[in-house]
Length: 622
Ligand code: SER
Image (cartoon, rainbow, N blue to C red; front, side, top):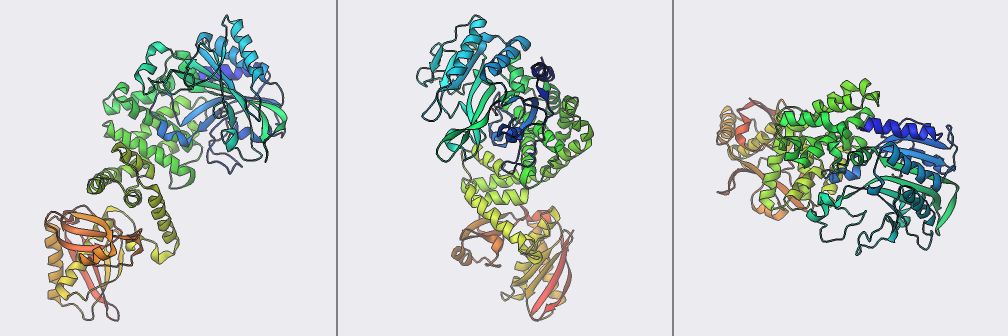
């Protein structure tokens, strides 16, 4: 059965148990400021679980789209996805444990055809505030015995592994559900309750446990070796956290959530959820664009499959890629997928094409995909295009930073973010591949400083007087440094920067000097800049102490806020590091080109007075 058949079967089954079928809510929660995304089926149901009456009655069922941003880094193994559909059924003060466990067991074993021998369950062990869930244990024993299985209940212990058990007791870190997790983490007023989870056993013979990092631990259903997969969770939501403990909610609720793709994986008895049919079209597209096969690099494929499917669903719910709030996650997903796509050797634009496969797979269930078809593809394509413009350069910059310091500092990470559009998490991931961590605190401090500055008004709007970080602007920015140095060489060391403004078309540089420049001086300045462009000098920066910067002869605005990083200062050097001979050393926040050869030809267009004792030059590159 594919996911669409399983979804229909589930909704039909619960409809037969007198449940009202409701459509999935948006991935962006309405009226819920506590969270950015809908991460579980119960989230939109919270008011009803707390006692408000539902217009459609006390029995509700649905298949809810979910996005768990916190799982982005988990994607790559055989079972984690950021986006998934959660099959749900709710009793709002109506039926309870007996009916719930029987229905789910019946649906899974009879309608989906899962072999009960491969099903294992867990229940709440009990503690000083809430008793052990004996009632669920009794129901499970009966259900298993009806299919000829004697279900032994055992207290889970890490040391003893399976102990021949079928029903396992766990504490509230595993068998308790609330939006905030364990009992201890719940804020006052939050609803929660003990739960009973179901696991599918892919079998020891597959050798997961033997070959995994968990091979020295005895296997149990909740261990992470991959043999067992949680496919459903019945939460008995009957409590509310108080100042001193728990009190009963006005009604006893059931909140069931079952991972649709995971159930499909169990039904196929294939432990890889990315092997389900829903991914087949996307997978083929990636295979043909990259000339590789899924098995060649399952990790990269899984990241691309998961991330682009999630991004398509997010865009369909109105979350286009941006730099903040929900949109930041769409951006992160697409950019991460793009990087993995490059690693697979894809050279063409692929996000829109993979997106088209998501649309054709899901449009029959989600009509929005049909309506938003063009928007989704366009957003995916343009985000990919944007990132590709800076990805290569950013990766080279990353490499240089890494080689220079053996690590990526928080400041470096901010440069990668602001100049090359690398989400911090991507930089962290790349550093992680080299066995290094990034100092996120420093990154955040930089980020905040930048935000504060960009709020500080129009005149200060652009770092170092740059209108943007386009290639043309960056080239002119490097040319400005060279001009500054050339003016000092020709006119004398009294020349100091008084202002700078750069657009993609021209640079404008104000400096201290009292007389009009002669034609000869102008020619000398132009020649000096062009000579050094032709030398194709490398450009690099170092973050050093203020005193060191001065003693090494750096010029420029030492008070430049953009160049100041945690008591240190960023200095750009134009010239050969090996000989330590530089044409220019200047305090600056960047960004700059990698080599002066990229600048082309420098022409001084105008030299005029700007204020008393200040001259202004306009110049271009072509
Ligand atoms: N709320 C529970 C979960 O998300 C069951 O729906 O697992």
